[in-house]
Length: 475
Image (cartoon, helix red, strand yellow):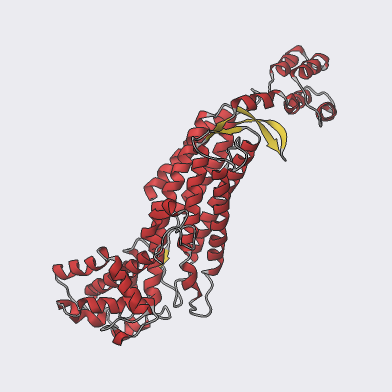
């Protein structure tokens, strides 16, 4: 059977394929093979700088076109060299080695050309990890910068827009699930917006690392073959040419510490958004937010009235899946037995799955926000039912006036009870306070006791816009 979305084992390649397809150029098996070919070709070309070979412009173009125009058929041939064996290559025997198969492919492509003189220079001095670590770092960097960060920016733009639109709209604050004191809708949304933005800035500043120093990290093969070259300088320039930070001191493998930093940061962003999803779910349940009806969309197979908050639920679930992978990557990849074991190889192949789950989540949180709006009527009714939320400011006014035990006075009157406007008026009429204090109490309502929430939200929006500007420039 040919692979289709219905036959895919992983939902990121099946049910959610449309949402994650932009990751394919960076996280697929084809992308990995293409990047390996690129590293091998660029390494061969770089050897020209140390006098090991020379190329004319046509040969350089031909070499680079090998990876620029690598086809699926080319990639399949490389895969076949690894897993099946191909007649005329490696005596028709499978290599069972993915990087060696790339080397044999390149030798096969150019064996009948002027480049056949370079045959023994493909992969010379290198170990497989010299190729793979650069490939995976480049692929991860591109996937995060070109797919995940743009999706997060769209989500942040929506939170900023809602924060601005509803910065002064009052809503009951909930502490321990109970009515506490009023806040504003926009302010509570921008709390999430600014938290995510701060982590995005940190994410955009992580420099993924790469190494090129041979089988034990000591440049042994390099200096054995060509002792008159400054291979450390060569290695640094080569790694940095891929937009990576050079790691000069490693075992056989690049230790993946910078990758771990990126995985932890992504997991932190996901954790914040998981809280966003759960709060939005709760607000919808309490009718603080209402969902827009979509023509033809069914909420229940038996209850016609329902509009389920499925976008937030989907996002929550996928964020959990992503974080399970990301936390594992961050704790597994920096650990290798002695100078090298191969357990990281299979683990890194799951990176695309984790990023895919995260990308699905970001898009569904945005969809959830796009299909809901504050339930103004219910918010107003709920605020008006809970004038006891004013017990905080009233008791603070009394304490400023020097009235003893004001906290307990208000606690006895309001704890476990719902106050109305009349209760506030009756209390103000009897309270032993100056007339101007009485007037201040009477001026309080659950609709206006929001402190500096609107102004704080405006300040937050400005900060987030600045951060997003920096992130976009980095990306």
